[in-house]
Amino acid sequence: MTRKIIISTLLLLLSVVGASAQKISVSILGDSYSTFADYVEPDTNLVWYPAQKNDVRRVEDTWWHQLITDMGWKLCKNNSYSGSTICYRGYNAEDYRLRSFENRADDLGNPDIIFIFGGTNDSWSGARVGDNDSKDLYTYRPALNKMLGYMVKRYINVKIYFILNSELRQDINEATLELCKLHGVPVIQLHDIDKQMGHPSVKGMKSIAQQIKQYLK
Image (cartoon, rainbow, N blue to C red; front, top):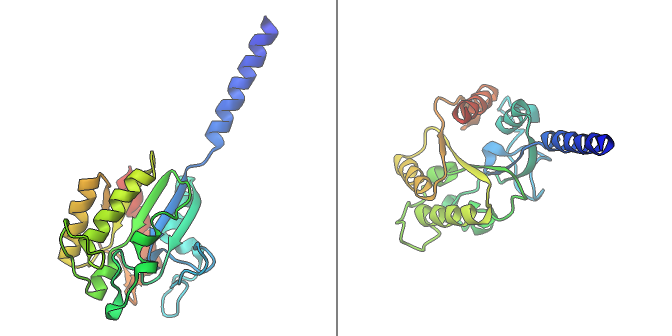
């Protein structure tokens, strides 16, 4: 009887140790702000970092690498694409459907947490905001509405956060806050991010990581 109790106790301890050793996995659906050469999937995605005239030269300087390291998490998949928009309309009215967030939303692996960091290029490219009830995915609201609705159903028991960049158009901010609230997706609204060439510097990346950690606390 004593031997059975010892064996049962050992098995219980092993299961507890094994469970505690499993790290939380994180996936990212992003644009240039979350790219870094050799750290995005698929590897055909365009990347911006490391770039000339920006002091972010190491992957360790990126916001997501700092956050994951500090939190003791692990990276599941970083599906970020430089210049990508949430809707299908990109710069110079080009068709960005294939690179859009909405089109990439089903390719994030099997994470515990997902960070969506988008809306910047929609704001910069002059994308029309559109109406929630519209099905025109070449405008912002319908594309974001469809993407969020899909993701909360596709990624069951996964915590999804939307990171909203600073200095975006007010109509993009309002649409994002409204639709994320509708779908139960918390928004981490950034402020005072230092940038070079419109992209976070080393200082800016550190601030992003800190603001996300502060929000999660």
